[in-house]
Image 1 (cartoon, protein in one colour):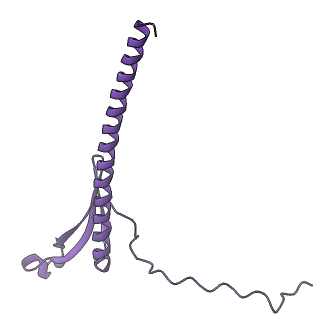
Image 2 (cartoon, helix red, strand yellow; image 1 turned 90 degrees about the horizontal axis):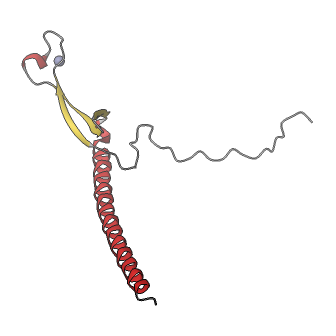
Image 3 (cartoon, protein in one colour; image 1 turned 180 degrees about the vertical axis):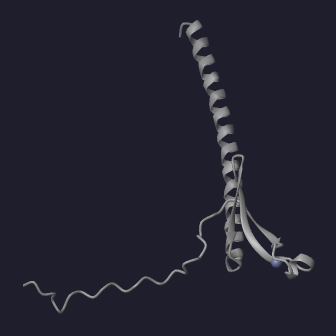
Length: 126
Ligand SMILES: [Zn+2]
């Protein structure tokens, strides 16, 4: 007793490694924008010639606030895809909401019709 058993169960195999900086495979709001930057170092090529970049940012809006998140260049394609996926879902959601509004209007219409019929049959004393 007190000693670790030499035949302890082996540790589970490590999970397939997920790249640490892999963008999430979930839909993302917004779009990827490209920026070029001029630094303030005197004598830098960007002062007279080509600016630094491109740098990529995902830009999205929450209410009145605009958010901006840096996107590594190797993630740009995946993040753009995620943004498109979000857009598609958003459109689908709007469509479903419109359909729901129509169904609600139909139900209210049917409800009023049923109430009218009930009143009429009450008046006839049926
Ligand atoms: Zn510079």
